[in-house]
Image (cartoon, rainbow, N blue to C red; front, side):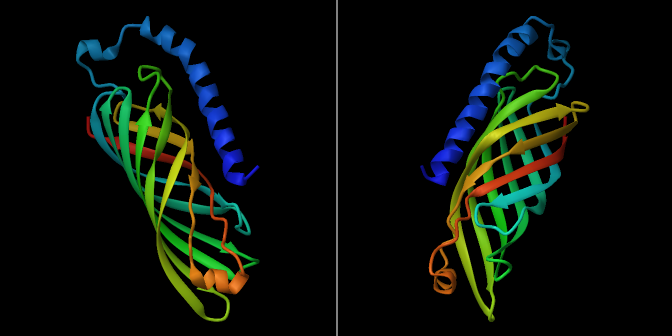
Length: 206
């Protein structure tokens, strides 16, 4: 079974577990009075927010897990639906340091909140991205590529106030660098599918 199919199975299991957990919690929350009924903003009220994030990144063929960071813009459209735009900076090494890839992923994602009134709000995230890659290869060779990729995974929002929300998620992404110079150097493509585990904070204008 390929790595991609194994990763999809893991994603499916995690999402299913999140939905099973969310169902009874959501039923309990629906019985509670909502702060929104008094006209006060809540963490699920429609709003625009901006923030930053950082975390750990691991691609399948990478030498090691590395740190990454970036900025995110989140828009809560509905209590159950949000959008996210983000840009990150990543740097990874492959083949014992012989290949270094610096990338700038520009991502657009949708967030689905199954229990938007809960004090802690799990979500499912999925989207697409454009990955701008700068590749340095031992011996002075280099290449630049721009590739399209997709990502999916679970996450959680932890509201500190209606205006300040912590978030954490893990996303599995599916990406092919597709560099002719890399293929020439190592006789095959790099497997750059992987996952970033990210924590962040968003400040909403509510």
